[in-house]
Image (cartoon, rainbow, N blue to C red; front, side):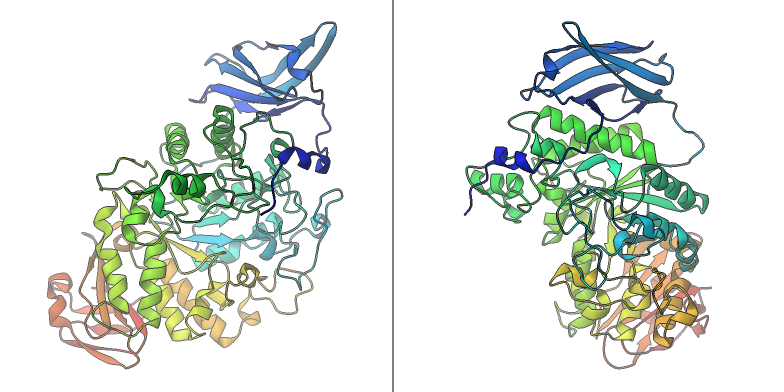
Length: 612
């Protein structure tokens, strides 16, 4: 195993800061509850922090000055009083006869944009990898001086040129489909030598990746989204950064990162974090080991690191108008730090939603990392998770596994029956696939019927549904390697001969699935029963799983036939939920059904009926 000695990395430094002094966060606002801000200030001189800082601005005071171990850095605690006025705050750094000055913007909060609304069970999230969706601005495909100069759509690991403008260009498509919230994989700068398409190796927290656009364009994107009564989900990465981040190449303190005598990878094993018998060594390696060699693990026990990350989260919501917060690799973070960070967001923005990626095994394990009903030593304040359990041990088994006492659709039923472990399971984000998983169309063997069944379940079960870009047009691919599930949405590039954004560019099968998805998604928008109603499910029998979404205004009946034969269903068993209803109208097709006696359901089909 190769030894990792971080000081040797310094010769890789590329100076991307034209100013001799840089300040993070790059600005703040008057009127924030979080009015005590810690500025990380970086100079170019190794004796920079021997100077004495002072501030000139009414209502802004310096509370404490921390001279960090690396002489290039200060951490300066300031207070922004309620009486402070917006403007450029001047900071002076005096060392003998030498004085350096900088201005730091203090802005007024923008009340014109409705944001931090929360992404709830009323929404449909659409997950996009910007580099692979649409190229709206070819002029930014390559940026001079960035380490990765690739541009090759024939390679699954090179950059393809997709960007934020490309997504703006297709917001009408998404709105027509029934999407109400958009989640982009991380959009901040990834100045790494390769594999920069995914965005999870951040090298500058305060700069939008220039191959995707600018800070101003991302703000415009948010404004365009909100004009359509849609919402914006931000993908947050706290656990790690890119190896070429400025504070990895020049660490402010010796313990800025989790470092080991030799390179140590995380085990990716979540069990020691909750195991009452776990060895301390296993806990440490899980939490403090690096995600990959190119993604150093941040030490969130370091108060300066913690403050940097928390303030960046607040800054992002305020600067770009974020409504929901998805936290990458949630379980690899220090969990007490995550509680503190979540609380800071919820204190400032009471309606914001936060959900964490918890790729674990078992409902109890997943519930441990969110607000739960279990009596455990650690109490998480995370409101919701990405629900891998209903995916890996639920809907996929229902579709692809033969029915049995504990198999097939019984696994989906059993998984949902354990929702008592969550404080609020309706907040969990349910999905069929994402940028890390094999595409659902491939998982079901490219069977259109099975795919439509899965989509119908996604849009009618409890929780917040998330659709991965292109699922609605039969995009496929297995995830080994991951680039195979991150292909381009055809029609997003000027040179594409086929445009899947239009009915004319899609095949008959693609239009069938697109229209199926659109019908269910748009029905869902106006369905109080599905958006916020209760779920009642019946024990599956003979491959048939029946559940209802209902409230005082509406009842939606869902009959899932997972067998390979048409089934005749005796509806008497479901009388307690059907009640006095006599007719049901299928949402996807408009067909009318009698629900007073028996009903035939085609093989591998989910019949969704609005009862009346």
